Image (cartoon, rainbow, N blue to C red; front, side, top):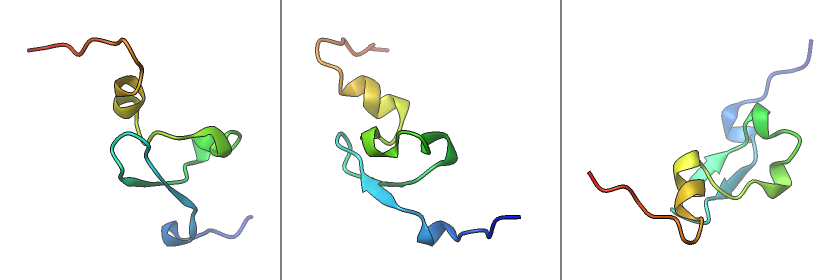
Length: 55
């Protein structure tokens, strides 16, 4: 069984939209080098020409 790593030992990045840091996730394992946004909300906000829904 593989040795568990502490969350503090995982790599982190800074989100290009909100500026907050986020930690590596298993689902990003294959393309961690290409991940630039911390969430779907930031990814959608970064798309040009997209209108924000007003409520």
